[in-house]
Image 1 (cartoon, rainbow, N blue to C red):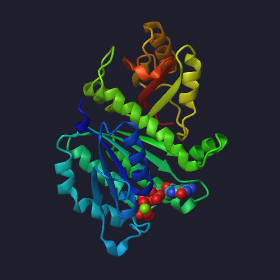
Image 2: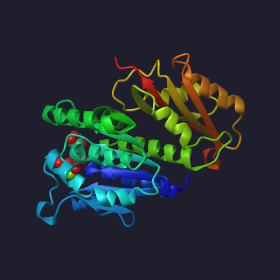
Image 3: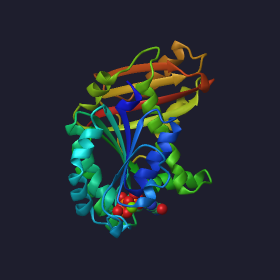
Length: 304
Ligand SMILES: Nc1nc2c(ncn2[C@@H]2O[C@H](COP(=O)(O)OP(=O)(O)OP(=O)(O)O)[C@@H](O)[C@H]2O)c(=O)[nH]1
Ligand SMILES: [Mg+2]
């Protein structure tokens, strides 16, 4: 895959800020698109595509009005269609519960999918105590889930808790999102020992049922710790055991052996359905030394 075939898209304030962070983390080896009604989201974007929903009159965004954002997103569909021409994969990042992300994310996903792209969405859910926001977010999630191939449901509450445990402010939780996007982009862009390609990705994302993504990182000789770090993801509870599709990409330093690859792969796929379709990829990255990074995409998770 080439970098112009992968688009990192942020929708709404939080989504745009995550998209910018993720894009710089993967050294701009993908295209970026920022969608918001609020000019502030574009302030740091020196290059890349920007779609502004609305005019200067309402600088404050879509003011918690998802239908307005949706309507505006629809009105720019011709621009989106043009932008989508080279794109094979969209990684959509958004925070639900406000106006713009909640209203526009699913409509953008719909348009991207119509253009033939695989759409992987990461949607942040607001804190439980914000019950009105949470209700708005739930509706937005259901709509997004309908159009995206994969919708990863992130809990801002867990993200905040984990950030606090590490002595950081909650915005730093963006790191997790950045690693995830970076891992995915690397997975698909570069050739490895065992190659994965877009057809593999499609085979996994097109399975019925729920799906999610996990990233783990750790010492190559301690596969259990890598699995543990993946399980610490700030995802909302989802029982991944019994998943019927799994794409797993393992990246390690120059000294990585096939037996290390094998033991990590085994550990990560242990809980899956015995008939699960598992697609494995592995590659060497000089910058990883003795650590390993594992990106796993699980699908066909039955609804409980
Ligand atoms: N706790 C906390 N949550 C935040 C913060 N910023 C965003 N969020 C959450 O993320 C969700 C989406 O926020 P934004 O991305 O700013 O909203 P938007 O899509 O730009 O929507 P509008 O600005 O209303 O048009 C909200 O529901 C909040 O729960 C923050 O600074 N602190
Ligand atoms: Mg906003």
